[in-house]
Image 1 (cartoon, rainbow, N blue to C red):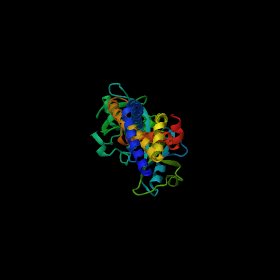
Image 2 (image 1 turned 90 degrees about the vertical axis):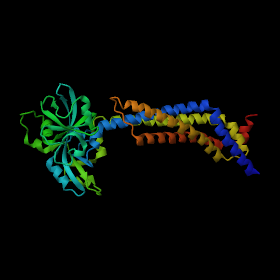
Image 3 (image 1 turned 120 degrees about the horizontal axis):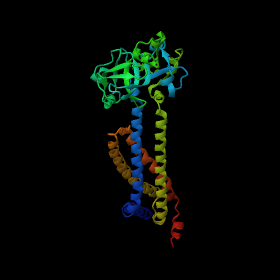
Image 4 (image 1 turned 180 degrees about the vertical axis):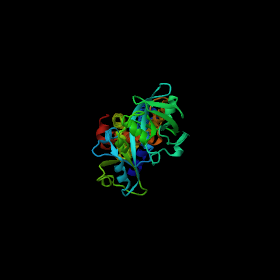
Length: 392
């Protein structure tokens, strides 16, 4: 008899929970609207974060590199602008076990002018045309690969400035002329500046501040920013041990991204904003279901008095929260993706990627459920006699 009563209470409570979603749709709709707005903001921030990362380090990400070895003692966050390594250090790295290849890599931001005087900012990647760092032929969609002393292979985004194969850009103050001989497939940028691959010898002259006809100190042709390392297949390279005695400190490719101008500050700022949004969502959902549980205290007490188990009532309340969270998050993500599609056609660095968006949506739902769980946990502490007595 008791079990039948309990089962009936649980059945009626389930029915009541679903009826509440319909008859209290204004309240649940308002709660869902808040969650949907948070979901829209999370999607937009995810797109901005991905866009800024691509705009800051896409050129580095597309290099066939496992790690970079910088001058020992150089802070990673300024390594690409402060580090200087030499050719013999690259040779020593090439002899290490687990290193398939090692080559000098130069990195420098320059201001230049196009053929019609237009301003062109470039991130010069100095590489040996015969090394593994040179752009692969399948990445060059227009023109040819890196070969000429004064030829450069540029990111596809440079064409947005009206430049193309055969055009010449002149480096400011030095007067060095660089001719575009090839265009890469897709975006290759560093520090929000378009990448231009340039022969290492030409990069070394520009880095030394030598213009056409200027004398260059001989040792400049043995210097670069870093040693680019490619790990052998199946190797588990210990960068610290392998680099001992080379006068360099190696870091994985992902860690080197911090050397891109503004990368750490931008990503940390957006991550902090997203963290606050998740926290706000959990708190708002928790507050809503706290109030909602208090308002339902009499109905919960009746169900408890009829034999409904606390665990069942908690799961039932969390089911309500899940319906609201999943539905409103799905709507918010859809609106955010639609709005983001409009932003991708602007100059704003914005890129929607499925995995980060899906992860953000899932995290929003999970944290919302945790907030709701903290609120509806008080259901288990409802005393049927006290609660019913308070309604007389």
